[in-house]
Amino acid sequence: MKNQKLLWKMSNRAPKKSRKELSVEQKINRRNFISFTVFGALGLSAYGGWRWLYNSPMEPAGGITGDTRLPLRRALNKTELAFRRVFSNNHLVKTYPKEMAAKYVRHNTDIGSKSKLDAAAWRLQVRKISGEIMAISIDEIKSLPKFDIVYDFKCVEGWDQIQHWGGVRFVDFIKHFGLEAETKLDYVGLETPDKQYYVGLDMPSAMHPQTLLAYEMNEQPIPVRHGAPLRLIIPVKYGIKNLKRIGSISFSNKRPHDYWAEQGYDYYSGL
Amino acid sequence: MFIYWANDEYSITIFGHTFVRFFPDWYYNLLHIPSRLAEGMAWHFLFMWFFTLNGIFYILYTIISGEWRELVPKRNSFKEAWLVVLHDLHIRKMAPPQNKYNAAQRIAYTAIIVMGIGSVITGLAIYKPVQFYYLTWICGGYHFARIIHFALTLGYVFFFVIHVVQVILAGWNNFRSVVSGFEVVNEEPKTVVENE
Image (cartoon, rainbow over all chains, first blue to last red; front, side):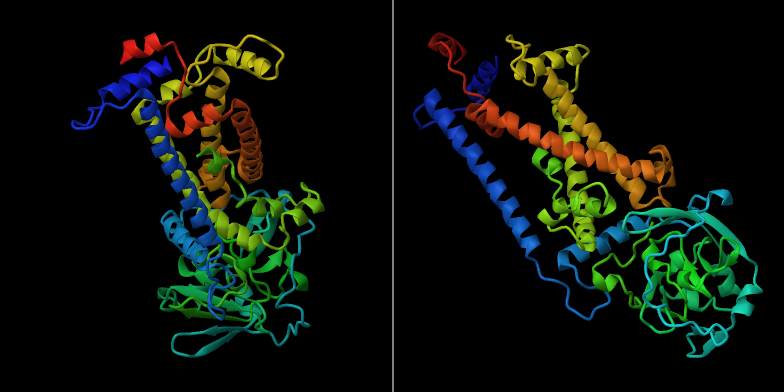
């Protein structure tokens, strides 16, 4: 059956005029040769492409992002651009009843909040475009309307946990302190007071209606290890972006430096 | 194509970290997996494009060329597939009807497409659970989507192993036909002449 089909196809092909008619054996050999040459060439080029990619150069050190092969970083950034189109403030993270929130909230890292916290001296520093630096006390922040969220906190490592956080929405914070002009810039940068941990956020994610400057966890003041007195809770990003113990906030059109992006992670890490 | 679909060298790093308790330590060390999460994710988010586009082109090709008729299981395929399995395991002597693809192949090659679509959908559901919240919902939530995504990956490995073993068992002539698109069957000379 198959054989007949093949022969039918072959006989339909116009034979070259001057050449002698090829025998079936020759036709088979010829087609096998062509097929396997193409197959081999494709195989080799796939292997070559793989070797090229596998040995491609790393990003230059000291950049905003680092520790990743250049083509892979380019792919990460392009992927972000592709998926950014579906980002919307109307897409909210799923929330849960507060009974479902974990009593023992998982703690992953202390980077940036290892030193002893001087709660009385703590002020949130906000660097305005004008160069002016505002120093905001925790009481001023707590006087703003409080917003509670119970949602599934997701870590890039793969774990997730339903957690309950309370604080002021970043949008409300911006409005209250008259920082609208700053939000016309593309990025927000946050740092811990000791500058050991730092994250960069794209403005739309920071201005998402569920992004919080949180001071409560499970309706109690946030414990020191979880980022007292004020931490970032940004449900549209992985945990690595949820900086603890915020020291300063700044705004920029250039991407602010980011702790984990320097170590090979996607700069945006959006959800 | 199927090698690509089944080759999960790129993504296992991520899953290695995701399912920390799933694999024993020796498995990680064997594959040099520890502390390479970021690297794994970078590979994953490049190769997901290849796999997805490859899958889309393949599906389009089968539709446009009409090849899907040879691939989609028929009503009696499931019964026949069982006979194929019995035959391949040398339990049953008589081979079931074999067209271009036998019943077991029809099921397997269609299943892999369904699995591929499943991987893309669950992948999107866990990659952007906020933006694609409806996909996450369809997949039964974030956790369940992750489990499906991971189980499908194991499925590809399984498929890949069986596929390669079967190709080796089927022999050289079969492999040659896969590559070149035709099979050489030695028949009575008369038949050949008639068809010329």
